[in-house]
Image (cartoon, rainbow, N blue to C red; front, side, top):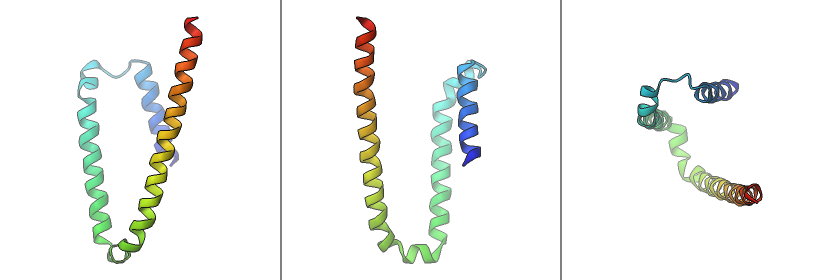
Length: 95
């Protein structure tokens, strides 16, 4: 997990420092999307090859649905609260 956080922070620093060439930035969205699809394909293949997991999928599916739903609801709620506070902060700055 630490490697993931460090990699993400390194990318933010490189992007903020304008170290990444502009020609790369134009293609970054597409490469991120393709990489994400490849990772999801690999994850699906790994799950599909695990017989015990596939056998328990109906029981795990309900729990996963509940956890996913609450994660989405929580994320949207936090984003909405941040957006409302951001709007209030911006209005105070303009006055």
